[in-house]
Length: 64
Image 1 (cartoon, rainbow, N blue to C red):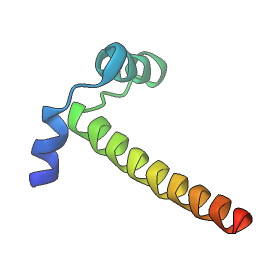
Image 2: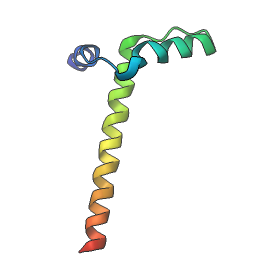
Image 3: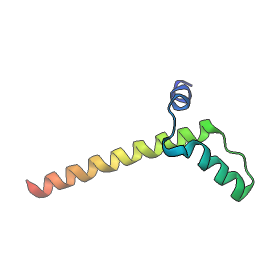
């Protein structure tokens, strides 16, 4: 529940908060909740950070 509150407090950059749901709604005719998009964005950013840390570890292994 706390994640949902944090997710809704963070605005998406570059107008994406309007573009993404409108784009999905226009393409598929499906309404997409703001909370759902924010949670997916948070999960995507988390996964990207994990992958980036893995890349840094691999680069360090190559140097050492």
